[in-house]
Length: 215
View 1 (cartoon, rainbow, N blue to C red):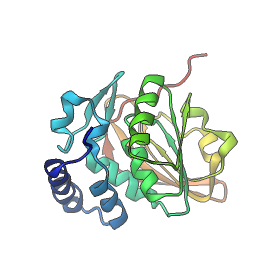
View 2 (cartoon, rainbow, N blue to C red):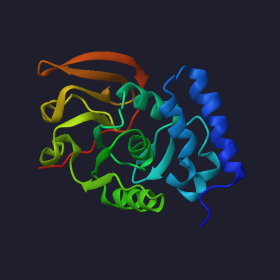
View 3 (cartoon, helix red, strand yellow):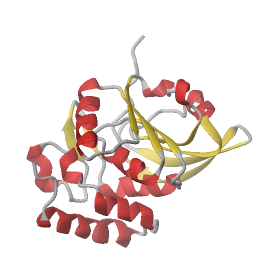
View 4 (cartoon, rainbow, N blue to C red):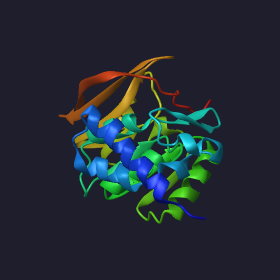
Protein backbone atom coordinates (compact mmCIF):
# COMPACT_ATOMS: atom_id res chain seq x y z
CA UNK A 1 0.00 0.00 0.00
CA UNK A 2 1.29 3.44 -0.94
CA UNK A 3 1.41 5.54 2.22
CA UNK A 4 2.16 8.91 0.64
CA UNK A 5 1.90 10.56 -2.76
CA UNK A 6 2.34 14.00 -4.27
CA UNK A 7 -1.22 15.02 -3.42
CA UNK A 8 -1.09 14.03 0.26
CA UNK A 9 2.31 15.67 0.70
CA UNK A 10 0.97 18.90 -0.80
CA UNK A 11 -2.14 18.73 1.39
CA UNK A 12 0.03 18.26 4.45
CA UNK A 13 2.23 21.22 3.54
CA UNK A 14 -0.86 23.37 3.07
CA UNK A 15 -2.28 22.16 6.39
CA UNK A 16 0.86 23.18 8.26
CA UNK A 17 1.09 26.54 6.50
CA UNK A 18 -2.57 27.57 6.84
CA UNK A 19 -3.67 25.87 10.05
CA UNK A 20 -0.54 25.61 12.17
CA UNK A 21 2.05 28.28 11.41
CA UNK A 22 -0.58 30.94 10.66
CA UNK A 23 -2.11 30.31 14.11
CA UNK A 24 1.12 31.07 15.94
CA UNK A 25 2.56 27.62 16.53
CA UNK A 26 6.25 28.50 16.70
CA UNK A 27 8.00 25.26 17.68
CA UNK A 28 9.74 24.16 14.47
CA UNK A 29 10.15 20.60 15.75
CA UNK A 30 6.36 20.37 16.07
CA UNK A 31 5.72 21.75 12.58
CA UNK A 32 8.35 19.44 11.10
CA UNK A 33 6.70 16.45 12.78
CA UNK A 34 3.32 17.40 11.32
CA UNK A 35 4.91 17.82 7.89
CA UNK A 36 6.41 14.34 8.11
CA UNK A 37 3.55 12.27 9.55
CA UNK A 38 0.91 11.06 7.02
CA UNK A 39 -2.21 12.00 8.97
CA UNK A 40 -4.51 10.36 6.41
CA UNK A 41 -3.41 6.83 7.35
CA UNK A 42 -4.73 7.34 10.89
CA UNK A 43 -8.35 7.87 9.83
CA UNK A 44 -10.90 5.46 8.31
CA UNK A 45 -10.71 5.26 4.53
CA UNK A 46 -14.08 6.99 4.08
CA UNK A 47 -12.75 10.13 5.82
CA UNK A 48 -9.28 10.22 4.29
CA UNK A 49 -10.18 12.96 1.81
CA UNK A 50 -10.86 15.17 4.85
CA UNK A 51 -7.72 14.18 6.77
CA UNK A 52 -5.96 17.52 6.29
CA UNK A 53 -9.00 19.70 6.92
CA UNK A 54 -9.16 21.89 10.01
CA UNK A 55 -11.57 19.60 11.84
CA UNK A 56 -11.72 16.55 14.11
CA UNK A 57 -12.79 13.30 12.44
CA UNK A 58 -14.63 10.20 13.62
CA UNK A 59 -12.38 7.13 13.98
CA UNK A 60 -14.96 4.67 15.36
CA UNK A 61 -15.96 3.42 18.81
CA UNK A 62 -17.39 6.86 19.60
CA UNK A 63 -13.92 8.45 19.41
CA UNK A 64 -12.32 11.13 17.25
CA UNK A 65 -8.96 12.29 15.96
CA UNK A 66 -8.36 15.89 17.05
CA UNK A 67 -8.05 18.67 14.50
CA UNK A 68 -4.44 19.30 13.43
CA UNK A 69 -4.16 22.65 15.23
CA UNK A 70 -5.12 21.15 18.60
CA UNK A 71 -2.56 18.37 18.15
CA UNK A 72 0.08 20.99 17.36
CA UNK A 73 -0.93 23.21 20.27
CA UNK A 74 -0.87 20.41 22.84
CA UNK A 75 2.47 19.20 21.49
CA UNK A 76 3.97 22.68 21.72
CA UNK A 77 2.66 23.17 25.25
CA UNK A 78 4.38 19.95 26.33
CA UNK A 79 7.81 21.36 25.40
CA UNK A 80 9.00 17.85 24.50
CA UNK A 81 12.76 17.34 24.51
CA UNK A 82 14.60 14.60 22.56
CA UNK A 83 15.46 12.83 25.83
CA UNK A 84 11.90 12.83 27.22
CA UNK A 85 9.88 9.80 28.25
CA UNK A 86 6.22 10.60 27.58
CA UNK A 87 3.01 9.08 28.94
CA UNK A 88 0.01 9.42 26.65
CA UNK A 89 -3.42 8.79 28.15
CA UNK A 90 -5.69 7.83 25.24
CA UNK A 91 -3.96 6.42 22.16
CA UNK A 92 -7.03 6.95 19.98
CA UNK A 93 -6.03 6.95 16.32
CA UNK A 94 -2.32 7.03 17.17
CA UNK A 95 -1.70 10.35 15.41
CA UNK A 96 -0.80 12.31 18.54
CA UNK A 97 1.26 9.28 19.58
CA UNK A 98 3.29 9.60 16.39
CA UNK A 99 3.91 13.30 17.01
CA UNK A 100 5.17 12.54 20.52
CA UNK A 101 7.36 9.74 19.16
CA UNK A 102 8.93 12.15 16.66
CA UNK A 103 9.70 14.67 19.40
CA UNK A 104 10.70 12.54 22.39
CA UNK A 105 12.76 9.47 23.23
CA UNK A 106 10.10 6.97 24.38
CA UNK A 107 6.29 7.06 24.37
CA UNK A 108 4.15 4.93 26.68
CA UNK A 109 0.57 5.09 25.41
CA UNK A 110 -2.51 3.57 27.00
CA UNK A 111 -5.95 3.13 25.41
CA UNK A 112 -9.13 1.90 27.07
CA UNK A 113 -10.75 0.58 23.85
CA UNK A 114 -8.86 -2.49 22.68
CA UNK A 115 -10.00 -2.25 19.04
CA UNK A 116 -8.61 1.28 18.73
CA UNK A 117 -5.38 0.29 20.43
CA UNK A 118 -4.87 -2.55 17.96
CA UNK A 119 -5.56 -0.34 14.93
CA UNK A 120 -3.23 2.37 16.17
CA UNK A 121 -0.46 -0.12 16.88
CA UNK A 122 -0.77 -1.59 13.38
CA UNK A 123 -0.55 1.84 11.74
CA UNK A 124 2.36 3.02 13.87
CA UNK A 125 4.29 -0.19 13.29
CA UNK A 126 3.69 0.15 9.54
CA UNK A 127 5.32 3.58 9.81
CA UNK A 128 8.28 1.90 11.53
CA UNK A 129 8.09 3.60 14.90
CA UNK A 130 10.19 1.64 17.38
CA UNK A 131 10.02 3.91 20.42
CA UNK A 132 6.33 3.43 21.29
CA UNK A 133 5.07 1.06 23.99
CA UNK A 134 1.37 0.12 23.84
CA UNK A 135 -0.97 -0.69 26.72
CA UNK A 136 -4.70 -1.40 27.00
CA UNK A 137 -6.36 -0.25 30.19
CA UNK A 138 -7.72 2.57 32.32
CA UNK A 139 -5.56 5.62 31.75
CA UNK A 140 -6.84 7.33 34.90
CA UNK A 141 -4.59 4.89 36.78
CA UNK A 142 -1.49 5.77 34.79
CA UNK A 143 1.27 3.23 34.19
CA UNK A 144 3.10 3.18 37.55
CA UNK A 145 5.54 0.43 36.60
CA UNK A 146 7.15 2.73 34.01
CA UNK A 147 6.98 6.01 35.94
CA UNK A 148 8.22 8.64 36.37
CA UNK A 149 7.63 10.45 33.09
CA UNK A 150 9.01 13.76 31.84
CA UNK A 151 5.75 14.67 30.13
CA UNK A 152 2.13 13.48 30.28
CA UNK A 153 -0.53 14.21 27.65
CA UNK A 154 -4.20 13.33 28.08
CA UNK A 155 -6.18 13.20 24.83
CA UNK A 156 -9.69 12.94 26.33
CA UNK A 157 -11.27 15.28 28.82
CA UNK A 158 -11.15 14.59 32.53
CA UNK A 159 -13.18 16.14 35.35
CA UNK A 160 -10.06 16.34 37.49
CA UNK A 161 -6.31 15.87 37.38
CA UNK A 162 -5.92 12.50 39.02
CA UNK A 163 -3.35 12.37 41.85
CA UNK A 164 -1.68 9.35 40.25
CA UNK A 165 -0.80 11.45 37.19
CA UNK A 166 0.92 14.00 39.41
CA UNK A 167 2.74 11.20 41.23
CA UNK A 168 3.96 9.71 37.94
CA UNK A 169 5.21 13.07 36.63
CA UNK A 170 8.82 14.02 37.31
CA UNK A 171 9.60 17.16 39.27
CA UNK A 172 9.72 19.94 36.68
CA UNK A 173 7.67 17.83 34.27
CA UNK A 174 4.62 19.00 32.31
CA UNK A 175 1.11 17.60 31.91
CA UNK A 176 -1.31 18.88 29.25
CA UNK A 177 -4.98 17.94 29.16
CA UNK A 178 -8.55 19.14 28.51
CA UNK A 179 -10.18 19.69 31.89
CA UNK A 180 -13.90 20.12 32.53
CA UNK A 181 -17.26 18.56 31.77
CA UNK A 182 -19.53 17.72 28.86
CA UNK A 183 -19.64 19.92 25.74
CA UNK A 184 -16.71 22.22 26.56
CA UNK A 185 -13.49 22.07 28.50
CA UNK A 186 -10.41 24.19 29.19
CA UNK A 187 -7.03 23.15 27.85
CA UNK A 188 -4.62 23.33 30.77
CA UNK A 189 -0.91 22.90 31.28
CA UNK A 190 0.44 21.90 34.67
CA UNK A 191 4.10 22.14 35.59
CA UNK A 192 5.17 20.12 38.63
CA UNK A 193 6.90 22.25 41.23
CA UNK A 194 7.67 21.00 44.73
CA UNK A 195 5.31 18.07 44.32
CA UNK A 196 2.26 20.00 43.08
CA UNK A 197 1.10 21.49 39.80
CA UNK A 198 1.27 25.12 38.73
CA UNK A 199 -1.66 25.43 36.32
CA UNK A 200 -2.00 27.60 33.22
CA UNK A 201 -5.14 27.87 31.05
CA UNK A 202 -4.89 27.84 27.26
CA UNK A 203 -8.40 28.34 25.92
CA UNK A 204 -11.61 26.41 25.42
CA UNK A 205 -11.66 23.04 23.66
CA UNK A 206 -14.08 20.18 22.99
CA UNK A 207 -12.93 16.59 23.54
CA UNK A 208 -14.55 13.21 24.10
CA UNK A 209 -14.55 12.00 27.74
CA UNK A 210 -11.90 9.82 29.31
CA UNK A 211 -13.25 6.28 29.66
CA UNK A 212 -12.55 4.68 33.02
CA UNK A 213 -13.09 1.15 34.26
CA UNK A 214 -16.44 0.59 35.92
CA UNK A 215 -15.81 -1.25 39.18
